[in-house]
Image (cartoon, rainbow, N blue to C red):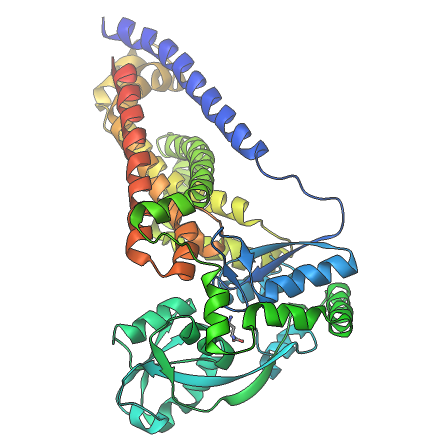
Length: 495
Ligand code: ASN
């Protein structure tokens, strides 16, 4: 009785699982083919900051614009190559360049001796200095007044290095942020008393409405340059040649004027206004950013589906290894689970995206790095419950099956697994939902999924509350749908 039922059931399940797999694979292919085709000319991937207006920022259509972006595109045009701009954040861009993951960085990047040692840096295209800014109306007006206070800086920047170099002298502590907006917000909310930023960027943010004031003269003058890795002399030569042409034909001045206007507060506010949504209500913002948010969601779903497929396959295989009557197989399974369940997802993502490429000397595209990260991490969790699910089946079942003459493999497949799978189903569902949520961590390696999309929109319009509410709602809707689907599957499998 027991055996009849158990032996018949897997067939139905098998066709069901195959069906599900085909649907998922179909979805994957559709989403994949929706991606734009690569052009045939020489193509470079250039990393940039998430938001560093007027050098790079998203406009109201969430397209990347700014002095750096226009310069890069104009140079690409005159020199006959194409570029993809990746807004990953300044520090992430520099790390990706170091790892050989991208071909260049244009991100309001100061030319410093340390950077020149590591990278090739172009001729300077804009001169800046570091200034200190405080909240409007603050009593703090000089570095000397920073004693015992907290100051906000941005990871890996020249301005942060400047702050760190005078930190002991003036006796302040620092707190680090990954992007300029979060650093400014820390000062406007009063958590930090000041921040350090490059003069034109700080001035532009203030001119366009940020409630900070600059209190020091620009220090540590440097020029902004484009960076490539040491071997990429070809791209660097093209950039320098292109820049020279743009300066000679007046295009360079035109680009500067487009974003800086006459340099006055009024002209900058007017230039910035053009990049903002006119209707600032929740639904106005939702309407204006709908397409972009859906683009982010599409990427989130694509990553989730592909990762779930691979993590499930890997998890089942590793989980099965863990119950084989072979110490070596079990050892592999235990080690895999131990390492990949133990590592924080963020560390694993950074390790694969920026660590591994320097080791193997080849690029690992962000999408692939994201999938590998999720496959290993979610796969380890899956393996753990697959193993646990099988082990949870009463040992008497295996003994009974073996004593009836079934070999180990057959007993596992026909007797133990059907029972184990029932135990595992809720864990599978749980893991799918976790995978969907975990994709948000991949924003760190520049995958333009829903969370990263949200960050970029907020970096432009500063509407954190409304945009994060939208992003949260979208996640909840998708998770609800996924839960319904999973419940339906659960019913089918357990029927
Ligand atoms: N200005 C910064 C630097 O050169 C870069 C940035 O924040 N985008 O370090």
